[in-house]
Length: 344
Image (cartoon, rainbow, N blue to C red; front, side, top):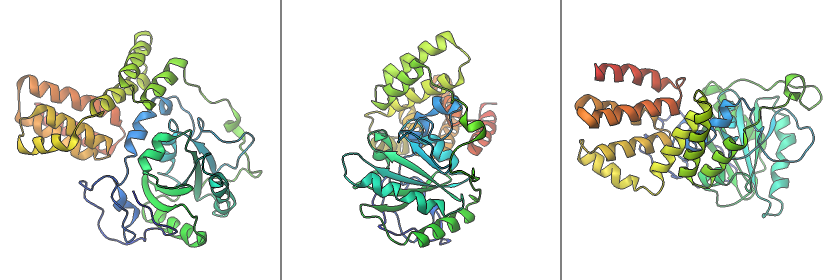
């Protein structure tokens, strides 16, 4: 994805891009942040951190960065904790600053954002992402240069810059706050008074077990079979572990997509509504790319028009996707009702 250099997309009222927008398409500087849905694949990163999310860790709890106390609005983020930052962006505008140790001066450029963000009175949080800790985040944003910055508003990316940081940050922040207001992201992070954490935030954070961390590590290196095996082991000892259940489903989903020709499957699915495997694979890909409604509608349509083993396979898959997506997603409740009507 090519990013604007020193510019934020305007708050135009133009319609959002269609769900079929190609992944990695350049951002149109005339569109609002809502038009960037699907521009980069962030949902896969969200799925990868399901186990850590369920463990109750706060955004950035697993991130890197220097020791010592940081302002409340600064979090250090890695692959495992990126989901928490995306969740936070539903309440507070998040600026993601990306750097790499191998690029001299890139960390200093991102750290220079701290005092600038501090002047926004808590409306903007800064997530610092070190490339060595977050290769999947870097891959998802398709970075061509660092330092770089991308804003997140309700989980949707708003490209800011790559390479040379802009100088007009007051204008950029003003536009981001306007976009946040338009999309209902209006909360602020309270000031602790001393620039550090206090109260309950000083309590120890829940930690992943060695086996849970090993499973996440396996997903990070794309060894999905090993991740599934590790989650199976966790579930053998703790059958009610919801995080492990979701992690296992995520490993299976990513394993099915790994190396698959989704474009060819999409063509087969369009040409032959009876091609079960193509319909399932396209639904998997749509969920991973954030097109949840499209995926669930596709499977419900298949279930309504088929019977026997094919119908049961599609039903089992959509139930797994419900668990993976999460019951709090607005599309899931509606899809459950439509599924019941299709089945009965």
